[in-house]
Image 1 (cartoon, one colour):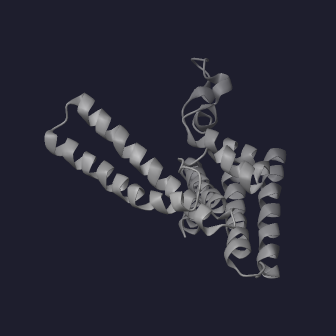
Image 2 (cartoon, rainbow, N blue to C red):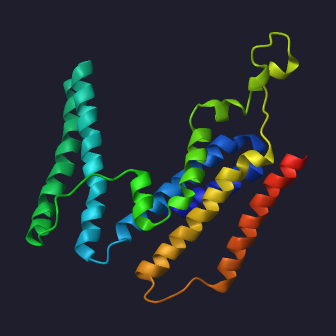
Image 3 (spheres, rainbow, N blue to C red):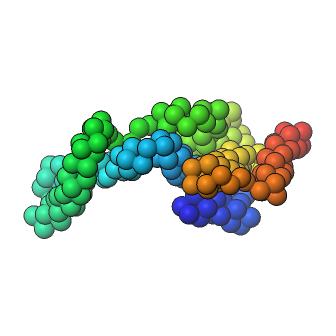
Length: 228
């Protein structure tokens, strides 16, 4: 559901304004990360191992609130603020403590925090899309790829060059990473749901056809933009 909502945001932003590519790419990246995490959680056939991976989210949550607590103390925030943050640390910690004995009784390894996206992709066998994911990340972060949306970097040091002025320079091609990543997120998500939860179901021929059409359209858009 998270991925579908994010992919819908990509469509809305792309139709609304060509220049919203950074926000659209961030939405596509969010969709992809949600699906990759879900696929990684469902990868094992053992239900207890799946639950152990689900608990990785809670370990990350505890680490987050612990860091917030340490920062609040270092800033000398009010005691009320410190207590509220510490209450979140304790809440998540109690939940983890209640679950841990169940895993211990099954002889499972200790719970660990969520691995990197790269490691999750390795396990689910989807490493071929890692380059696409990293390209999308470069556009989302305030880096050269994102700055190119508003400035001709080749002319940036020319004080009188009209090309160096700030203005939107987004082209349809800049949406390629967002579109391809969003399409792939939907396909990977549905593939995962069907294979792990679908009890022998398969993706419909209609969806596979729509997927192939969408991929071809995105690639054609790049070629057309380059030739133009």
